[in-house]
Image 1 (cartoon, protein in one colour):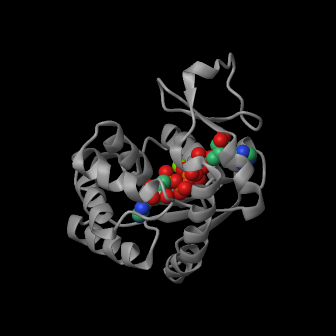
Image 2: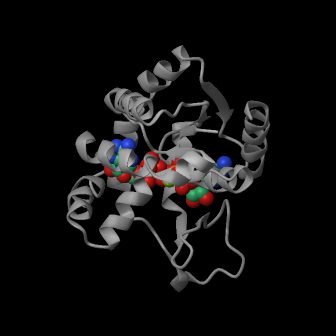
Length: 212
Ligand code: AP5
Ligand code: MG
């Protein structure tokens, strides 16, 4: 099964992606995670990506499309299927993805679109904490870790209010045309993301079990 998971910043893409890949054995490909890894490794690509991400802007398409293409070309993707998280984010990226998939003889089976009220997102992002060792995402209030120790967790650079504001602007502007693109192809499954994490997971699982 080859899937996309879409939604505004803080909609719960990463949270739900972790559960989906565990349940369905897919390869999780998050462009945001790949950029953060490159930043941590201080690569040239990481330095470039950081200059855009810290401001809440999109990394240029030529860089982003390139890393997605390289990752999708790997054998594990063909064997297990993929869940793309955070890509595509522009119509140009959606068109590039079509070309990449065609060239690799892969196809898309569905798009999980998490719909949320944008007013709730600042609170979700400002309370997000990430476990240093495992990279697992939690929330101080909505999904607190058992045995919370502040020193074991970090917050994302781009979860500061100014960057969040810009991320929301950029993503709200881009999200409608992209969803329409996939709706025309009959691939979109809308999920109500304004519910508790466990309920959102249930709803996604129902949709995907029928897709299999
Ligand atoms: P990326 O890392 O993809 O960030 P994003 O799209 O802004 O989304 P987030 O990861 O912030 O949110 P999420 O939906 O995964 O939510 P999460 O599950 O963590 O991209 C970062 C940057 O990289 C971009 O700004 C851009 O610069 C660059 N980039 C990435 N892809 C790119 C591309 N294709 N093109 C160009 N540039 C690109 O949940 C958030 C919080 O809410 C957590 O604390 C969680 O516990 C909590 N939560 C989750 N679900 C619920 C719920 N149902 N109820 C209550 N709380 C919840
Ligand atoms: Mg994420």
